Length: 102
Image (cartoon, rainbow, N blue to C red):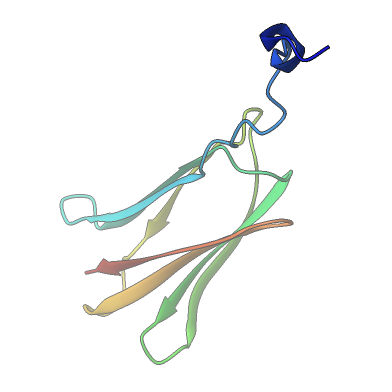
């Protein structure tokens, strides 16, 4: 009792931080599309939304989350005016958002 060995512990750290979600959305002018990639998502279904700066819904699509938490999708911008847009990706547990300029 009272020896330095009394304070040693061996085991797995229960406080290992979870990996952060990756989300990226960008406009490709050559293809006139917004590309969306996400990984490390939690959930089985996702909704992809495009909203203009005045809050109007421009585009919405339901998609599945691939094993490992991946979503890859594209939004065709044909017929959609130039300007700033908000890309939202929602799962049962997450809400991700990014800005894109066309």
